[in-house]
Image 1 (tube, one colour):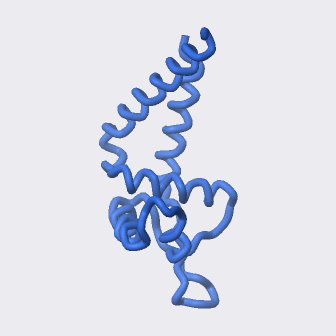
Image 2 (spheres, rainbow, N blue to C red; image 1 turned 90 degrees about the horizontal axis):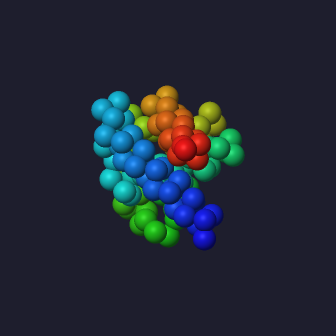
Length: 119
């Protein structure tokens, strides 16, 4: 029972820190769909794989392709992602993280670390 309480407290500290991060003016406000899509993209980027716009639109069944495409556009406007054109086929565009997105994930990682090590 003690472990469950410890893990619950750690998770709740993490959620509080994430909420504080969402309120930092450095990062743009994102709706839950944008956050989910960005998280899914991060899992691909972490594996150092390229992901095309078309592949990004079908990352999950939770988000329709149309909605994903709209959210990719808004994430780009917010400076969280950018598009790189394929070297051999200019019709193919890859979704890449910006420095702002990398800083966002670094900040989230620091929050998780802080929540785990809180007394």
